Length: 410
Ligand code: GLU
Image (cartoon, rainbow, N blue to C red):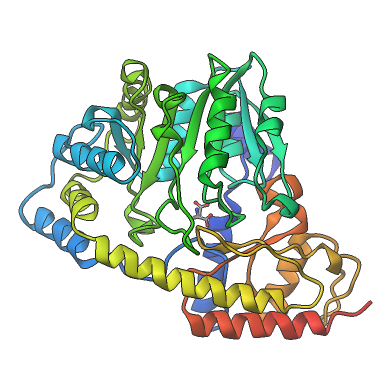
C-alpha cells in the first residue's frame, strides 16, 4: 500500500489486518484454479453440502416470492424456532424476543461486542483464540486482556487465571468452547467454575461462542454458560448454521441474550438496522427447517467428523518433531511445531516461526495449514489443521507433511 492510499482510509480501517483464515482459503482456491494439487487443511469449513430440508426450504421460499424486506432481527417464527432449539438443546431459558439473527456468527459476535463495549472497557479472552475477536474488540475501542493457556492444560483457562485477569473495568469475557483453533473444550464442571468467577463481577458479561457445540467427540458433554443461573442474565450465546449445518456460505448466525430486559438484543437490533438491515429474507424458512428437521443429518456429519478427527490425530501424532493434544470438539488439531524452528526445509527455507513453517509447507509439499500467530498467546508455536475434509485428503495430506518433516535439515 502506498502512503497516499493509507491516507485515503480511516485510521481504524488502516489498522485492521485481513482475516488470515479467509486469506488462506482464497490462496488455496487460487492455487487450485491454476491446476495445483493442494491439500487444504486451512479453512474451518465442512466439505458436506447443507442438509436437503434446509436447501429445499430456501428454494421454496425464493420461488414462492419471499424476496422482500424481513424484520430486522429475523422473522418471528424463525426467532421462535431458534429460541426453541436454544431452550431444548442448550437449556437456555429464552423466547424468540431474546434472539437476533444476523449475517453469520461472525457478524453476531461483531454486533454483540459493538453493543457492549465502550472505549476503556476490558475484554478478557483465553488464548490461543479465534483470530477475529481481537480486531472486533479493538474496533469497539475496548482493551483486550489475554489469558494465556497452553497444551499442558488442553488450552483451557483455569477459573483462577480468569479471576486474576478480571478488574472493575472488565465488561466482557469471551469463551469459545469447543475452541477454534485448539479443538479442545471445557467439561461441564469447568464451565460452572468459570460462571462462578464471572458472576462475582457485577458489570461483566459473557459472550459464549458455541458455534461448534454439536461437534463434540468421545462422549464429551457440552454445557452452555447461558443455561447457568448465576450468569444467565448476562450471557450472550452465539451460534449459527455455518458449522453444524455445513452452511458457511449462507451467512446465518444468531445471538441469544435473554437477560436484563433484552437490552443487548435490542442494541444489536438497532446496530443491525443501521448496517446490514437483516439476513437474506428467503433464508428464514431454511433456518426453521434446520432447527426442526435435521437431527439425523447433523448427527451423521458429527460422526464423520469424529472419525476424521481420530484419523488426523493418529497421523499428526506420528509426525516427527511435533506434539498435539487429541481433538475433543470442533474440527481442528493444533500441533506444536516449534521444535522445527532453526531447521531448514527440504526446499532450503529457514524455519523460524509458524508463518515460515506454513509458507514452506504450502510451497514445497502443497499442504495448506493456518499459522498460529494470529490466534495469539502461544499460537506462534502452533499451526492449525482442519479435519473438515475427506479421509483420503487427510491421509494423503498428512503423508506429505510427514515426508516433508522427515527431510528437514539441521
Ligand atoms: N471460522 C472459520 C475458520 O476459522 C472460517 C474463517 C473465519 O471466519 O475465520 O477457519
